[in-house]
Length: 463
Ligand code: GLC
Image (cartoon, rainbow, N blue to C red; front, top):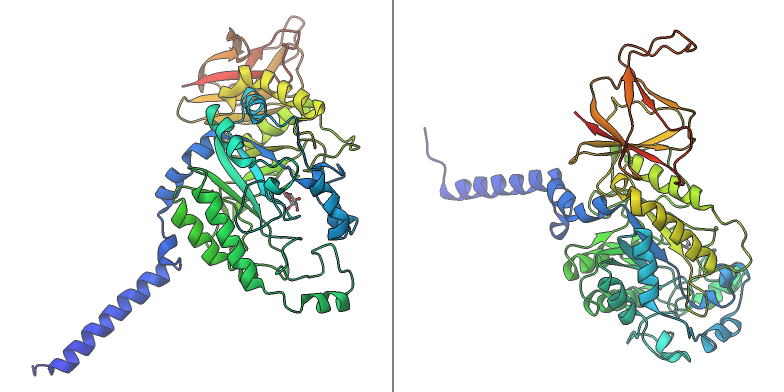
Protein backbone atom coordinates (compact mmCIF):
# COMPACT_ATOMS: atom_id res chain seq x y z
CA UNK A 1 0.00 0.00 0.00
CA UNK A 2 1.28 3.41 -0.95
CA UNK A 3 2.15 5.67 1.96
CA UNK A 4 0.12 8.85 2.30
CA UNK A 5 2.06 12.08 1.82
CA UNK A 6 2.89 13.85 5.11
CA UNK A 7 0.48 16.73 4.44
CA UNK A 8 -2.39 14.31 4.05
CA UNK A 9 -1.46 12.46 7.24
CA UNK A 10 -1.41 15.78 9.06
CA UNK A 11 -4.76 16.75 7.55
CA UNK A 12 -6.22 13.44 8.62
CA UNK A 13 -4.99 13.97 12.20
CA UNK A 14 -6.49 17.45 12.28
CA UNK A 15 -9.82 16.07 11.03
CA UNK A 16 -9.81 13.33 13.67
CA UNK A 17 -9.02 15.92 16.34
CA UNK A 18 -11.84 18.20 15.15
CA UNK A 19 -14.27 15.30 15.11
CA UNK A 20 -13.40 14.35 18.68
CA UNK A 21 -13.88 17.96 19.75
CA UNK A 22 -17.23 18.11 17.99
CA UNK A 23 -18.44 14.81 19.40
CA UNK A 24 -17.39 15.97 22.88
CA UNK A 25 -19.24 19.22 22.65
CA UNK A 26 -22.32 17.59 21.19
CA UNK A 27 -22.39 15.30 24.18
CA UNK A 28 -22.45 18.20 26.56
CA UNK A 29 -23.50 21.53 25.14
CA UNK A 30 -22.53 23.26 28.37
CA UNK A 31 -19.82 25.90 28.12
CA UNK A 32 -16.57 24.64 29.62
CA UNK A 33 -16.90 26.71 32.79
CA UNK A 34 -20.31 25.17 33.46
CA UNK A 35 -19.46 21.51 33.07
CA UNK A 36 -20.15 19.34 36.04
CA UNK A 37 -21.10 15.70 36.42
CA UNK A 38 -24.51 14.81 37.82
CA UNK A 39 -22.79 13.26 40.83
CA UNK A 40 -20.83 16.46 41.52
CA UNK A 41 -23.97 18.53 41.26
CA UNK A 42 -25.74 16.27 43.69
CA UNK A 43 -22.84 16.61 46.09
CA UNK A 44 -22.79 20.38 45.75
CA UNK A 45 -26.48 20.49 46.58
CA UNK A 46 -26.38 17.90 49.34
CA UNK A 47 -26.72 20.21 52.34
CA UNK A 48 -29.64 21.97 50.72
CA UNK A 49 -31.49 18.79 49.80
CA UNK A 50 -30.94 17.56 53.32
CA UNK A 51 -32.01 20.72 55.13
CA UNK A 52 -35.33 21.20 53.32
CA UNK A 53 -36.49 24.27 55.19
CA UNK A 54 -35.37 27.87 54.81
CA UNK A 55 -36.53 31.40 55.56
CA UNK A 56 -37.12 33.95 52.82
CA UNK A 57 -36.95 37.59 53.90
CA UNK A 58 -38.37 40.41 51.81
CA UNK A 59 -37.33 43.73 53.17
CA UNK A 60 -36.90 47.08 51.52
CA UNK A 61 -38.44 50.54 51.26
CA UNK A 62 -41.82 48.91 50.55
CA UNK A 63 -42.03 48.00 54.23
CA UNK A 64 -43.00 51.64 54.85
CA UNK A 65 -46.09 51.91 52.64
CA UNK A 66 -46.82 48.36 53.88
CA UNK A 67 -49.05 47.66 50.89
CA UNK A 68 -47.11 44.96 48.97
CA UNK A 69 -43.56 44.98 47.62
CA UNK A 70 -44.92 45.86 44.18
CA UNK A 71 -46.68 48.98 45.48
CA UNK A 72 -44.55 51.32 43.39
CA UNK A 73 -45.57 49.51 40.24
CA UNK A 74 -49.16 48.75 41.21
CA UNK A 75 -49.96 52.30 42.23
CA UNK A 76 -47.74 53.81 39.54
CA UNK A 77 -45.85 55.90 42.05
CA UNK A 78 -43.36 58.24 40.45
CA UNK A 79 -39.74 58.10 41.66
CA UNK A 80 -40.20 61.54 43.25
CA UNK A 81 -43.18 60.34 45.27
CA UNK A 82 -41.54 57.06 46.19
CA UNK A 83 -38.56 58.96 47.54
CA UNK A 84 -40.27 59.65 50.85
CA UNK A 85 -39.86 56.01 51.86
CA UNK A 86 -36.14 56.33 51.30
CA UNK A 87 -36.04 59.54 53.29
CA UNK A 88 -37.85 57.93 56.23
CA UNK A 89 -36.21 54.50 56.19
CA UNK A 90 -34.94 54.12 59.72
CA UNK A 91 -35.63 50.66 61.20
CA UNK A 92 -34.83 51.42 64.83
CA UNK A 93 -35.83 47.94 65.99
CA UNK A 94 -33.69 46.02 63.49
CA UNK A 95 -32.03 43.23 65.42
CA UNK A 96 -30.72 40.52 63.12
CA UNK A 97 -29.80 38.32 66.09
CA UNK A 98 -33.49 38.21 66.99
CA UNK A 99 -34.46 37.32 63.38
CA UNK A 100 -31.87 34.57 63.35
CA UNK A 101 -33.05 33.24 66.70
CA UNK A 102 -36.62 32.99 65.44
CA UNK A 103 -35.56 31.33 62.20
CA UNK A 104 -33.50 28.80 64.05
CA UNK A 105 -36.21 28.05 66.58
CA UNK A 106 -38.62 27.46 63.68
CA UNK A 107 -36.24 24.81 62.36
CA UNK A 108 -35.08 26.79 59.36
CA UNK A 109 -31.58 25.93 58.21
CA UNK A 110 -30.92 28.59 55.60
CA UNK A 111 -32.04 32.10 54.83
CA UNK A 112 -32.47 34.09 51.63
CA UNK A 113 -32.61 37.87 51.98
CA UNK A 114 -33.62 40.43 49.34
CA UNK A 115 -30.40 42.40 49.00
CA UNK A 116 -32.14 44.41 46.28
CA UNK A 117 -35.76 43.99 45.20
CA UNK A 118 -37.44 45.31 42.05
CA UNK A 119 -37.58 48.83 43.51
CA UNK A 120 -33.76 48.93 43.18
CA UNK A 121 -33.00 49.89 46.78
CA UNK A 122 -29.91 48.16 48.16
CA UNK A 123 -29.55 46.89 51.72
CA UNK A 124 -25.78 47.10 51.57
CA UNK A 125 -23.24 49.83 51.03
CA UNK A 126 -22.80 49.28 47.30
CA UNK A 127 -20.16 51.37 45.58
CA UNK A 128 -22.25 51.46 42.42
CA UNK A 129 -25.34 53.32 43.54
CA UNK A 130 -26.52 56.03 45.92
CA UNK A 131 -29.85 54.28 46.32
CA UNK A 132 -28.75 52.35 49.35
CA UNK A 133 -29.31 51.96 53.03
CA UNK A 134 -26.23 53.90 54.06
CA UNK A 135 -27.74 57.04 52.54
CA UNK A 136 -31.00 56.74 54.47
CA UNK A 137 -31.45 58.07 58.01
CA UNK A 138 -30.49 54.57 59.20
CA UNK A 139 -27.00 55.14 57.73
CA UNK A 140 -25.57 51.69 58.48
CA UNK A 141 -24.97 48.72 56.18
CA UNK A 142 -27.52 46.05 57.07
CA UNK A 143 -26.09 43.12 55.24
CA UNK A 144 -22.96 42.58 57.25
CA UNK A 145 -24.71 42.41 60.60
CA UNK A 146 -27.42 40.25 59.06
CA UNK A 147 -24.95 37.73 57.68
CA UNK A 148 -22.99 37.60 60.93
CA UNK A 149 -26.10 37.07 63.04
CA UNK A 150 -27.45 34.21 60.94
CA UNK A 151 -24.08 32.52 60.66
CA UNK A 152 -23.76 32.70 64.43
CA UNK A 153 -26.91 30.54 64.65
CA UNK A 154 -25.48 28.05 62.14
CA UNK A 155 -27.86 29.17 59.39
CA UNK A 156 -26.60 29.19 55.82
CA UNK A 157 -26.72 32.39 53.81
CA UNK A 158 -28.57 33.04 50.58
CA UNK A 159 -29.01 36.30 48.70
CA UNK A 160 -31.94 37.31 46.55
CA UNK A 161 -31.00 39.77 43.81
CA UNK A 162 -33.61 41.35 41.57
CA UNK A 163 -32.78 41.40 37.87
CA UNK A 164 -35.60 43.87 37.46
CA UNK A 165 -34.72 47.37 38.62
CA UNK A 166 -37.28 50.17 38.66
CA UNK A 167 -34.72 52.71 39.77
CA UNK A 168 -31.67 52.21 37.57
CA UNK A 169 -31.32 54.88 34.82
CA UNK A 170 -30.28 52.29 32.22
CA UNK A 171 -33.01 49.75 32.83
CA UNK A 172 -35.02 49.89 29.61
CA UNK A 173 -38.73 50.48 30.17
CA UNK A 174 -41.12 47.83 28.90
CA UNK A 175 -44.82 47.13 29.27
CA UNK A 176 -44.53 45.82 32.80
CA UNK A 177 -41.65 47.76 34.30
CA UNK A 178 -40.91 50.18 35.75
CA UNK A 179 -44.06 51.85 37.09
CA UNK A 180 -43.82 54.96 34.97
CA UNK A 181 -44.05 56.12 32.22
CA UNK A 182 -47.32 54.50 31.30
CA UNK A 183 -48.00 54.70 27.56
CA UNK A 184 -45.93 53.16 24.78
CA UNK A 185 -45.05 56.62 23.41
CA UNK A 186 -43.96 57.88 26.79
CA UNK A 187 -41.88 54.78 27.27
CA UNK A 188 -40.16 55.04 23.94
CA UNK A 189 -39.29 58.65 24.59
CA UNK A 190 -37.96 57.85 28.02
CA UNK A 191 -35.94 54.93 26.72
CA UNK A 192 -33.74 57.13 24.53
CA UNK A 193 -30.30 56.96 26.09
CA UNK A 194 -31.04 53.96 28.30
CA UNK A 195 -28.59 51.18 27.72
CA UNK A 196 -29.04 47.66 29.05
CA UNK A 197 -25.34 46.95 28.52
CA UNK A 198 -24.50 49.45 31.19
CA UNK A 199 -27.17 47.91 33.40
CA UNK A 200 -25.63 44.47 32.85
CA UNK A 201 -22.32 45.81 34.02
CA UNK A 202 -24.01 47.30 37.08
CA UNK A 203 -25.45 43.90 37.92
CA UNK A 204 -22.09 42.20 37.50
CA UNK A 205 -20.49 44.81 39.73
CA UNK A 206 -23.11 44.43 42.42
CA UNK A 207 -23.12 40.65 42.28
CA UNK A 208 -19.34 40.80 42.63
CA UNK A 209 -19.72 42.88 45.77
CA UNK A 210 -22.29 40.51 47.20
CA UNK A 211 -20.24 37.44 46.46
CA UNK A 212 -16.88 38.75 47.61
CA UNK A 213 -17.55 40.89 50.66
CA UNK A 214 -19.67 38.63 52.84
CA UNK A 215 -17.80 35.33 52.99
CA UNK A 216 -19.27 32.10 51.72
CA UNK A 217 -22.67 32.58 50.13
CA UNK A 218 -24.60 29.36 49.83
CA UNK A 219 -27.51 30.27 47.61
CA UNK A 220 -28.43 32.91 45.06
CA UNK A 221 -31.97 33.75 44.02
CA UNK A 222 -32.21 35.86 40.85
CA UNK A 223 -35.62 37.38 40.13
CA UNK A 224 -36.90 37.23 37.33
CA UNK A 225 -37.24 36.88 33.54
CA UNK A 226 -40.34 37.44 31.42
CA UNK A 227 -41.24 38.01 27.78
CA UNK A 228 -38.96 40.79 26.57
CA UNK A 229 -36.48 40.55 29.44
CA UNK A 230 -34.45 37.39 29.51
CA UNK A 231 -31.07 35.86 28.91
CA UNK A 232 -30.02 38.42 26.28
CA UNK A 233 -31.19 41.46 28.21
CA UNK A 234 -29.54 40.28 31.44
CA UNK A 235 -26.58 38.69 29.66
CA UNK A 236 -27.42 35.75 31.85
CA UNK A 237 -24.67 33.47 30.70
CA UNK A 238 -21.91 35.85 31.69
CA UNK A 239 -23.64 36.75 34.90
CA UNK A 240 -23.83 33.10 35.89
CA UNK A 241 -20.26 32.49 34.80
CA UNK A 242 -19.18 35.24 37.16
CA UNK A 243 -21.24 33.79 40.00
CA UNK A 244 -19.72 30.33 39.53
CA UNK A 245 -16.24 31.82 39.41
CA UNK A 246 -16.68 33.80 42.62
CA UNK A 247 -18.55 31.13 44.59
CA UNK A 248 -18.06 27.73 42.97
CA UNK A 249 -20.22 25.90 45.54
CA UNK A 250 -23.19 28.24 45.36
CA UNK A 251 -26.69 26.98 44.50
CA UNK A 252 -28.50 29.16 41.93
CA UNK A 253 -32.21 29.25 41.10
CA UNK A 254 -33.87 29.06 37.70
CA UNK A 255 -34.95 32.60 36.85
CA UNK A 256 -32.12 33.71 34.57
CA UNK A 257 -33.99 32.40 31.53
CA UNK A 258 -31.51 29.59 30.93
CA UNK A 259 -34.12 26.95 31.47
CA UNK A 260 -33.63 24.95 28.31
CA UNK A 261 -30.04 24.26 29.36
CA UNK A 262 -28.95 21.67 31.90
CA UNK A 263 -26.35 23.98 33.40
CA UNK A 264 -28.09 27.34 33.74
CA UNK A 265 -30.03 26.53 36.90
CA UNK A 266 -29.78 24.25 39.91
CA UNK A 267 -33.38 24.03 41.04
CA UNK A 268 -36.92 24.95 40.05
CA UNK A 269 -38.91 27.57 41.93
CA UNK A 270 -42.67 26.96 41.96
CA UNK A 271 -44.14 29.95 43.77
CA UNK A 272 -47.27 30.30 45.91
CA UNK A 273 -48.87 26.99 44.99
CA UNK A 274 -48.34 23.33 45.87
CA UNK A 275 -47.08 21.22 42.96
CA UNK A 276 -49.20 18.11 42.56
CA UNK A 277 -46.13 15.88 42.51
CA UNK A 278 -42.30 15.99 42.48
CA UNK A 279 -41.41 18.69 39.94
CA UNK A 280 -40.12 17.24 36.68
CA UNK A 281 -38.20 18.58 33.71
CA UNK A 282 -38.32 16.47 30.55
CA UNK A 283 -39.87 13.70 32.59
CA UNK A 284 -37.03 13.70 35.15
CA UNK A 285 -37.45 14.58 38.80
CA UNK A 286 -35.36 17.66 39.57
CA UNK A 287 -34.42 19.58 42.73
CA UNK A 288 -37.11 22.10 43.60
CA UNK A 289 -37.92 24.65 46.23
CA UNK A 290 -41.29 26.26 46.62
CA UNK A 291 -41.36 29.76 48.05
CA UNK A 292 -44.45 30.63 50.05
CA UNK A 293 -45.80 33.55 52.02
CA UNK A 294 -47.64 33.77 55.29
CA UNK A 295 -50.35 36.03 53.93
CA UNK A 296 -49.99 36.53 50.16
CA UNK A 297 -47.60 39.43 49.73
CA UNK A 298 -43.85 39.12 50.26
CA UNK A 299 -43.16 42.54 51.66
CA UNK A 300 -44.84 43.55 54.92
CA UNK A 301 -48.52 44.26 54.27
CA UNK A 302 -50.28 45.71 57.27
CA UNK A 303 -53.86 45.27 56.10
CA UNK A 304 -53.63 41.80 54.65
CA UNK A 305 -55.81 39.36 56.56
CA UNK A 306 -55.28 36.23 54.54
CA UNK A 307 -52.75 34.73 56.94
CA UNK A 308 -52.29 30.99 56.75
CA UNK A 309 -52.91 29.07 59.95
CA UNK A 310 -50.02 27.35 61.77
CA UNK A 311 -51.53 23.99 60.90
CA UNK A 312 -51.70 24.87 57.22
CA UNK A 313 -48.04 25.84 57.32
CA UNK A 314 -46.98 22.59 58.97
CA UNK A 315 -48.94 20.63 56.36
CA UNK A 316 -47.32 22.71 53.65
CA UNK A 317 -43.87 21.84 54.94
CA UNK A 318 -44.63 18.13 55.25
CA UNK A 319 -46.31 17.99 51.86
CA UNK A 320 -43.38 19.74 50.18
CA UNK A 321 -40.91 17.25 51.65
CA UNK A 322 -43.21 14.36 50.74
CA UNK A 323 -42.78 15.38 47.10
CA UNK A 324 -39.01 15.73 47.31
CA UNK A 325 -38.93 19.51 47.61
CA UNK A 326 -37.69 22.34 49.85
CA UNK A 327 -39.80 25.03 51.46
CA UNK A 328 -38.65 28.64 51.58
CA UNK A 329 -41.11 30.40 53.84
CA UNK A 330 -41.23 34.16 53.77
CA UNK A 331 -41.28 36.83 56.43
CA UNK A 332 -41.72 40.51 55.56
CA UNK A 333 -40.24 42.54 58.42
CA UNK A 334 -41.88 45.86 59.26
CA UNK A 335 -40.50 49.34 58.69
CA UNK A 336 -39.31 49.31 62.32
CA UNK A 337 -37.18 46.30 61.44
CA UNK A 338 -38.89 43.65 63.53
CA UNK A 339 -41.01 40.66 62.62
CA UNK A 340 -44.73 41.35 62.84
CA UNK A 341 -46.40 39.52 65.76
CA UNK A 342 -48.45 37.46 63.31
CA UNK A 343 -45.24 36.22 61.71
CA UNK A 344 -43.55 35.53 65.04
CA UNK A 345 -46.55 33.54 66.24
CA UNK A 346 -46.47 31.34 63.18
CA UNK A 347 -42.73 30.83 63.36
CA UNK A 348 -43.09 29.80 66.99
CA UNK A 349 -45.83 27.31 66.12
CA UNK A 350 -43.70 25.81 63.39
CA UNK A 351 -40.84 25.64 65.87
CA UNK A 352 -42.97 23.83 68.39
CA UNK A 353 -43.84 21.23 65.79
CA UNK A 354 -40.29 21.00 64.46
CA UNK A 355 -38.86 20.56 67.94
CA UNK A 356 -40.34 17.07 67.99
CA UNK A 357 -40.91 16.26 64.36
CA UNK A 358 -37.84 17.53 62.53
CA UNK A 359 -36.60 13.94 61.92
CA UNK A 360 -39.57 13.65 59.56
CA UNK A 361 -38.24 16.67 57.61
CA UNK A 362 -34.42 16.84 57.60
CA UNK A 363 -32.84 14.30 55.29
CA UNK A 364 -36.28 13.18 54.16
CA UNK A 365 -37.89 12.85 50.79
CA UNK A 366 -40.67 11.15 48.90
CA UNK A 367 -41.48 7.65 50.16
CA UNK A 368 -40.76 4.66 47.90
CA UNK A 369 -43.74 3.69 45.76
CA UNK A 370 -44.49 0.45 47.55
CA UNK A 371 -45.66 2.39 50.60
CA UNK A 372 -49.25 3.32 49.94
CA UNK A 373 -50.44 6.49 51.63
CA UNK A 374 -52.86 5.67 54.48
CA UNK A 375 -56.10 7.66 54.66
CA UNK A 376 -55.75 11.41 55.35
CA UNK A 377 -52.02 11.41 55.61
CA UNK A 378 -48.73 12.45 54.05
CA UNK A 379 -45.63 10.26 53.90
CA UNK A 380 -42.01 11.28 54.19
CA UNK A 381 -39.07 8.95 54.19
CA UNK A 382 -35.48 8.91 55.30
CA UNK A 383 -33.44 6.50 53.18
CA UNK A 384 -30.33 6.57 55.37
CA UNK A 385 -32.05 5.86 58.68
CA UNK A 386 -34.68 3.67 56.96
CA UNK A 387 -37.64 5.31 58.58
CA UNK A 388 -41.00 6.10 57.18
CA UNK A 389 -43.05 8.96 58.61
CA UNK A 390 -46.81 9.08 58.52
CA UNK A 391 -48.03 12.64 59.04
CA UNK A 392 -51.59 12.15 60.19
CA UNK A 393 -53.68 15.07 58.96
CA UNK A 394 -57.00 13.97 60.37
CA UNK A 395 -56.62 11.94 63.57
CA UNK A 396 -58.62 8.74 63.08
CA UNK A 397 -60.64 6.94 65.70
CA UNK A 398 -58.57 4.15 67.23
CA UNK A 399 -57.07 2.54 64.16
CA UNK A 400 -55.17 3.38 61.04
CA UNK A 401 -54.98 0.85 58.26
CA UNK A 402 -51.68 0.40 56.44
CA UNK A 403 -52.40 -1.51 53.27
CA UNK A 404 -49.64 -3.83 52.11
CA UNK A 405 -47.29 -2.94 54.98
CA UNK A 406 -47.06 -6.42 56.47
CA UNK A 407 -43.44 -7.43 57.04
CA UNK A 408 -42.17 -4.06 55.95
CA UNK A 409 -41.47 -2.52 59.34
CA UNK A 410 -40.26 -3.67 62.72
CA UNK A 411 -41.52 -1.09 65.11
CA UNK A 412 -43.86 1.90 65.23
CA UNK A 413 -43.85 4.90 67.54
CA UNK A 414 -45.32 8.30 67.93
CA UNK A 415 -42.54 10.69 66.99
CA UNK A 416 -43.73 13.35 69.45
CA UNK A 417 -42.77 11.35 72.55
CA UNK A 418 -41.30 8.07 71.29
CA UNK A 419 -44.24 6.12 72.69
CA UNK A 420 -44.92 2.73 71.16
CA UNK A 421 -47.75 2.31 68.71
CA UNK A 422 -48.94 -1.26 68.77
CA UNK A 423 -50.15 -2.94 65.65
CA UNK A 424 -51.75 -6.13 64.46
CA UNK A 425 -51.92 -8.01 61.24
CA UNK A 426 -54.71 -10.24 60.05
CA UNK A 427 -57.47 -8.39 61.83
CA UNK A 428 -60.59 -10.54 61.64
CA UNK A 429 -64.15 -9.47 62.03
CA UNK A 430 -65.96 -11.01 64.92
CA UNK A 431 -67.33 -9.97 68.25
CA UNK A 432 -68.35 -6.38 67.73
CA UNK A 433 -65.83 -5.78 64.97
CA UNK A 434 -66.82 -5.77 61.36
CA UNK A 435 -63.41 -4.81 60.04
CA UNK A 436 -61.28 -7.34 58.24
CA UNK A 437 -57.91 -6.24 56.98
CA UNK A 438 -56.26 -7.90 54.02
CA UNK A 439 -53.58 -10.50 54.43
CA UNK A 440 -50.76 -8.06 53.84
CA UNK A 441 -52.23 -5.20 55.79
CA UNK A 442 -51.33 -3.82 59.18
CA UNK A 443 -53.64 -2.11 61.62
CA UNK A 444 -52.08 0.53 63.85
CA UNK A 445 -53.74 0.95 67.23
CA UNK A 446 -54.00 4.60 68.10
CA UNK A 447 -54.99 6.47 71.22
CA UNK A 448 -58.48 7.92 71.00
CA UNK A 449 -57.20 11.37 71.87
CA UNK A 450 -55.26 13.16 69.20
CA UNK A 451 -51.75 13.76 70.56
CA UNK A 452 -51.02 17.39 71.33
CA UNK A 453 -49.45 18.28 68.00
CA UNK A 454 -50.70 20.24 64.99
CA UNK A 455 -49.94 17.23 62.83
CA UNK A 456 -48.98 14.09 64.77
CA UNK A 457 -46.35 11.94 63.10
CA UNK A 458 -46.00 8.16 63.37
CA UNK A 459 -42.55 6.79 62.78
CA UNK A 460 -42.10 3.33 61.30
CA UNK A 461 -38.73 1.68 61.66
CA UNK A 462 -38.43 -0.25 58.44
CA UNK A 463 -37.10 -3.73 57.88
C1 GLC B 1 -42.18 37.28 42.32
C2 GLC B 1 -42.41 38.72 42.72
C3 GLC B 1 -41.58 39.16 43.82
C4 GLC B 1 -41.15 38.15 44.82
C5 GLC B 1 -40.84 36.82 44.20
C6 GLC B 1 -40.51 35.74 45.18
O1 GLC B 1 -41.22 37.15 41.39
O2 GLC B 1 -42.18 39.60 41.65
O3 GLC B 1 -42.14 40.27 44.42
O4 GLC B 1 -39.98 38.63 45.35
O5 GLC B 1 -41.85 36.44 43.40
O6 GLC B 1 -40.18 34.57 44.53
